[in-house]
Length: 222
Image 1 (cartoon, rainbow, N blue to C red):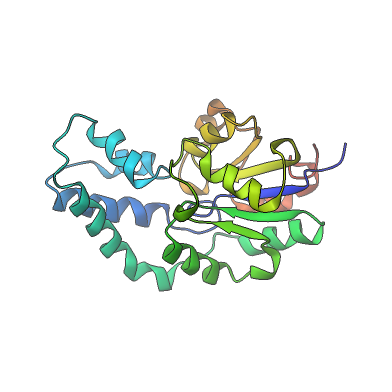
Image 2: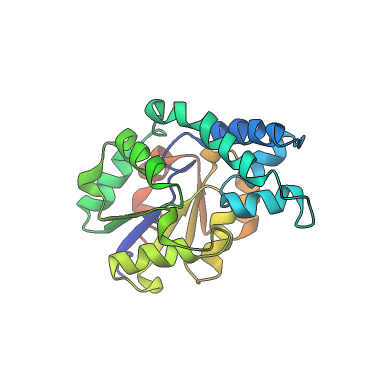
């Protein structure tokens, strides 16, 4: 069988080393809003959209009067990192390798347009990227699959002709709702066992590890 025609990539925590930056700045946002949430719990929720993350960590029956403050402080504290973001090992090379093999490459991110611009600048691999999504492209966030569906539409691909690469159980869950294979990376801080247990079809350490095993990975072997 031929390899997948398209490869969709999550960006935060998968290609860009930002997961723990988000965890700490969300922690500061929660503190500003009067919520004492351990960073370990926040880390495990990173990958959800901001709306779902608050519901997941604080419960749906909470007083929501400070929600906008929590989000605003997170955004304010995260903003200084945008110019200093760093790609994870092998990230740009992996994108280029897929592109050179003739595969379509999409960044399936629900980051804000400003954050996406900063992450693309850090990756410095635009010539290998055929499409990219941001929070403007979907109403519902992970673990709902809307942003993945948006990326597939941009590539004009059916779900059975693509594979997804992510770093969180929320990525795996979103893919499962579409029947899309999800390759997972542990560089976002989630363990191999948890990612495999959530349903990832293969687990690697980081983009460099996936690149080193590309020929036998689900990105090549359908």
